[in-house]
Length: 553
Image (tube, one colour):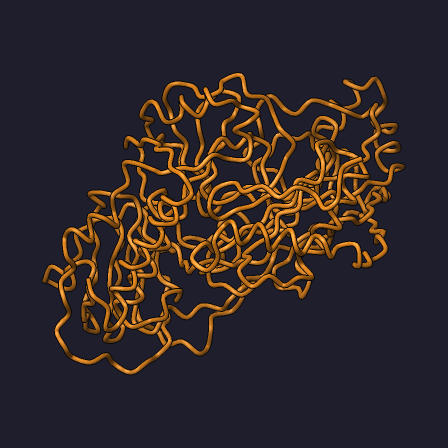
């Protein structure tokens, strides 16, 4: 019998994990459910997200406002009150499913593997009652326990690049439903017409932790296709400020993300380099979290439709306003009719372009950030295209005082990306100190497979014999070790949960540097202690504060 309250462990300087057990069973699930309820009821103001999983509850928090030792004590105090919480009765949710045919292309393969007929597979799958252990992987994706053992089937050797939304699938000893069209390696046996996740609903996720799910077979010919989510209309409060002439490789609208929804499988997201976004906004007089453009590797061009004040920070890319070169890292006045053109990034990966007033886009779940995988937020949940019109919230023009140039040493401090400082991660004990030594002992190269989800590295394998661990919450900056031993550093759009061991966590002061790593670049890891991580964050915040009105830089 596991003790209560459960142990609380720090994993980096911005994440703690509540360890409720070490296996997948109902008793452990109930402890997870109670711990999650206790933490949610406590209303901890410095907590950004709660990540319930099979045997743990992760707690992401803002280390600028609370130290990790204080957060641990606060979590422990909240858990001691969990006994007084009355958990709601489990809901029973029916999901209609069409099995086989075009919507269940792997049903025949599952039947062959199990020695059953396709009809028997469907009958046994729909006869069971499933427990929603948690939501993760993607928004609204349920990890369901209770698959009949005779239906266990290995995953596909090569994942599909696109699994349709609503697909019901089996992966090993698990079954689940894909809420969005995403890549996936589970074997698809059917599809439900219900939408498991819709960000426009008051309760976006159809299912929740602790629900009981049953699949109800649909009669042949009764299938109804899922309607796609309708993008939110343009915000009428904004006025047109620029037309996109050339979007570059990938340009999206981002802010500081949407905290508070990790338990629904929705990560915080936001800018991959939040420090550069904050500074760009401060330079033009916006609140530091106002929506701005994140431009990957440069190459973006906009035609101004009205006079505007802009600032570009982050990756170094040449910027021209009309016929004149425009300086980075300071406010620039651009006139209506001029073309604002950005060249290819010479250093770094992402440039942030803020417009005075902030881009006006309808918030989705409290944020303007673009969630590319789920297709919501920003501009219709996608990257910008030629012809898109950007809108801005009208505000008074700034004063005409001369902008100060940024000290080159300050800019170099903010954009340095060759070394990432780390603290031990959640599974360093399982992987061993030798794995941590291997991570810090040699440089790695950023591969072309890196994106906003994670930075994939290549080098000497780290813990190449590492096996799978129980899926659990994943913080930003987690250094995961897949079976091939090549580390992956989690970036802004990382899944809320993951099954690879977490060897280390990048400290909060260096998270913005991860967003500036580019393919082919070299990166090293440096192990530091808690006081060094806290001092580094305090130094970073002093520098950022210098960009605010009246600050020094």
